[in-house]
Length: 95
Image (cartoon, rainbow, N blue to C red; front, top):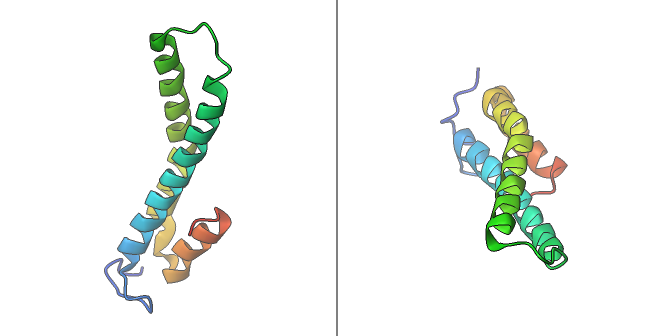
């Protein structure tokens, strides 16, 4: 097992790389959710502020639920080496 505190070529510990990857994944998903929400909410005529808030909360929860398993997988399996976090960043186009 690789020590997550080890510092790789990038100068960051594997733990830092894992955390940055998870954060980037969450930020990317939230950015997409928010952009889609902003487009859609303009078309939702006749909804009260409370209804809009409930729908927005539902979309936030949906994103959290969709990302739960991938983030858990990253956390539990990223000990395979420094390239693992980088591969996840490439797969999800996180920069």
